Amino acid sequence: MARSSPIPITLTRGSGTPLARQLAAGVRDQVVAGRLPVGERLPSTRALAADLGVSRGVTEQAYDQLAAEGWLESRHGSGTYVAAGAAPRRRRRPGPPRRDSSGLLRLDTGTPWIDPRHRAAWRRAWRDVSVATPPPAYDDPAGLPELRVELAGHLARTRGLTCEADELLVTTGTTGGLTQVLAALPPGRVAHEDPGYRAAAEVIRADGREIQDVPAARPVTDLTGCAAAYVTPAHQHPLGPVMSGADRLALLAAARDAGAVVIEDDYDSEFRYDVAPVPALAALDRDTVAYLGTTSKTVAPSMRLGWLVAPPALHGAILRRRELTHDTGAWPVQRAFLSLLRDGYVDQVVRSARRTYAARSERVIAALEGRVQPIRPVAGMYATVPMPHPTALRVAASARKAGFEVPLLRDYCLTSDLTGIIIGFGGCTDDELDRALAAVVQALD
Image (cartoon, rainbow, N blue to C red; front, side, top):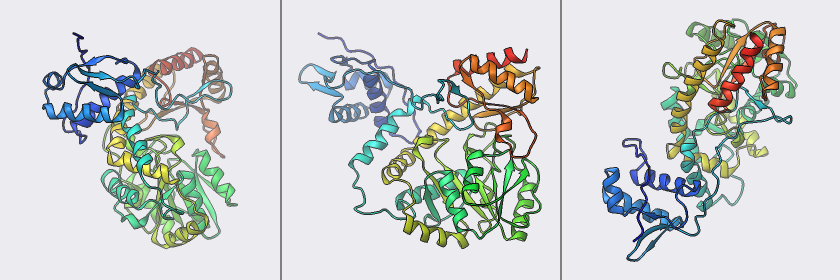
């Protein structure tokens, strides 16, 4: 008689995901990865329930689900086996490291790390899309209504930003939302942090507006002549500090005095290491702040999905323009993200990534300690390391020889004379990060 194989699976009670669903996902992952090959006999539902310390109903429900999906088959009088249709295949890590045209692994500020243990939830979301009925015509110009309801709850819970679903607009990412805000504003310059987010600067220029660069991580007290100010208050990009309470109030006062809108890019506030994420700036003044959020750091940059909470005075104008341009996220992507939010996937990947980033930031600090003085990260997936520009060029060249591209701080500057390097640690493995740091240390020594 064939002997059943043990299944190394850990179930997390109290996670919000039913145990049967966790078990089905774990078995499915092992079948797909080839660790449970075709024809393998699995433990009986009774034996597996005893092994995992759950009720037999949990294991029966999981086996039934996998049989319905075609991963398992039940043979009368013999047991449950991995189905012939579930041929083993090589499992790929999600979010492959980004390499440029030269084959270098780019250690940038925007490529996230996604825990591969959560891939089952990702696949479930797209299965949900495949059985859902798409709208017969253009979707709601504000975005999928059900998604906006979930997002409103998500923002209230994670960012301290209370808004109604009707006040939210689903966008094609941060730059898409920024474009729509700028189109609704009167003429005028846009204040932009220097150094700052380069893509935002390009969007501002493309709108035909002059950029007024303001020193990053410094108080902004005068916005005379500006239609808007673009800022990253929760985690300044790319220097890293959090905007203080006093500086937040000063910025809002300057915006009110000038009749300007503050555009808050809340790109990675979820990944605070030490304390809970700092509440959104928009929570202090909904009439002055346009809030931009994104999936690019939590789920995947390639989703091209985000959200905008605009001041009431701008919301109507932006929505009317969207009714003409149909400039919103693709319905399948919105529908998949809705499933990811409901299933708890977003919260899970954020928790996993936060722990990973905290550990990797310490690796960076430990490797460079005594050689240079990095700006210690408090959140996110990168560390900024000030140094003289000739040294930064030497470090970048050493990293290239080792197969890595390390961005230069000067490339994020408009008129600022700050120099150094930026070490991103999201889109790499621990081993790749250690090899990149070794190349950096070699150049510094």
